[in-house]
Length: 96
Image (cartoon, rainbow, N blue to C red; front, side, top):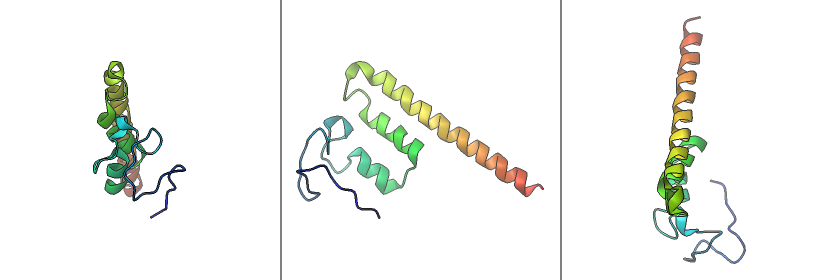
């Protein structure tokens, strides 16, 4: 697993809540911080962004809650479309 460097002034053993390492709208410094969940579950870009936008919907800006959910839906639809195309390509290769 790659080693990610935290911003200056932070070590992984400390419980620090700041706008760089643990912004409150990303789950803060909890067991279920969004990035920790995305990494633990091995989600790719689209599904990771989907989880990110769902988990922070309305927390950074209450007026943007619906926009955050629409972004999550956009990434989910992109993941679905990608899977459909991949399966179609696989089936096409198998039938040749």
